[in-house]
Length: 220
Figure 1: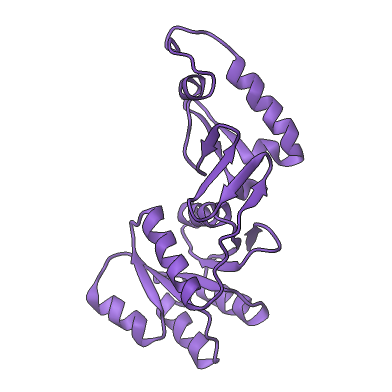
Figure 2: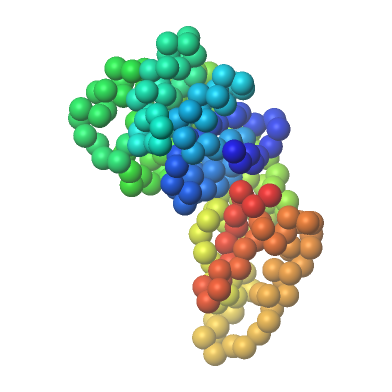
């Protein structure tokens, strides 16, 4: 199991066996101020939910050992009323109805946008009276969970998006002839930022070879 986030935030359990999707969900949720735990199987999910309390569960339907329907059914049989948002491979009416029958509170179909996912997460948390929209600090950035953005001075970012050196030179330093300029300005400032972030700097501000940089909040 992996866990990232701040100790004061609401806790969300992500149950997803596809590593790239699991990591993406953790990044998005953590950036919005939630504390995230992730497991890759239905049995691990049941064990985790029996041991700890969560404000919400993101539950994939297709899982090894026990599928999402079985996990949700078992949770409700135990009397666990944690809100469950099911992740389905397609908006098949039978699957959606089956999910509601076993106790799911809502569903989102893959592929889904970050905006749609967060709208459904926030709706469920509001319904349960647990949603927190308080801003928090992440290194030099002030993060606004409502907008899904982080800001430091004039610089505004969102997690996971790769930003190239030329884009940074244009948007941060105001250069207009970036195609013909050879400079190490960006690299120098990225190195300084990583040092300020401490021992997690390299993992938090990642270099994507040949493309640029990205903020990876699950790298802590």
